[in-house]
Image 1 (spheres, helix red, strand yellow):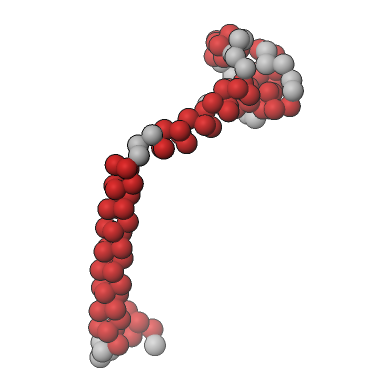
Image 2 (tube, one colour):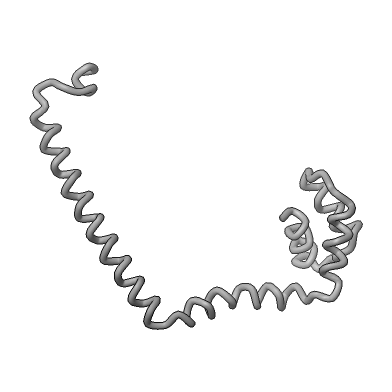
Length: 114
């Protein structure tokens, strides 16, 4: 991932993405640089418009989420209902624990210290 991040940093700063620049960024970050990985990255990004790739990647999850439609909405509603039921059960358990703590009669770790 460090190699990709180095390329993104170079792109953001307007620097050319070449072997020397990528290696410089990685070395500055304290990464043990593998020349073969640097060469592969530079070759892979040679004909790539990074800004377009970032925009496409950012838009993909939003488009994928809306494609599910009503089935996703039903599943989300069921999950919310389950979460509410679990929260109600947890609240009831906490109240029961609080009631038990009040009538301990000296039992428990709290009584050891005061």
